[in-house]
Length: 134
Image 1 (spheres, rainbow, N blue to C red):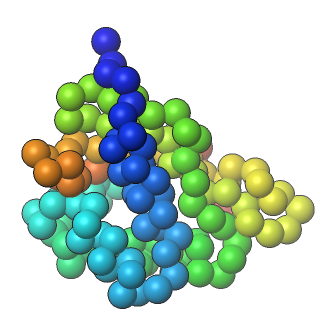
Image 2 (image 1 turned 90 degrees about the vertical axis):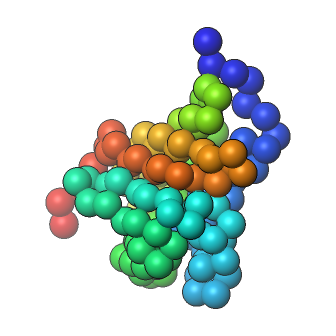
């Protein structure tokens, strides 16, 4: 049975969501360092992003593609499950302007495997709602 979501886990989820929206490159890099273990890895659509440099680049690229323009913001659906060192959440790209403001444009289930310091060792994104073709 999943454990109760603690304040610490909610904070991790909030920080995880916020890092994708962070527009300041220095603050974003610091947030990555605080969230992921030094040897952390993210798995997305068959691609791996390894280590802090790879993760900083990955978050910056995603921010540049989706958030920097103001078209989208990253959110989560507030449903979080926890079991030991595994945290599961749904992350979403939300339309931030235009006629679809507030609608979900993309969503993925995210599985975070935490280390003993509550930093992310492994991060898996499994798309459940793909972005529509442009």
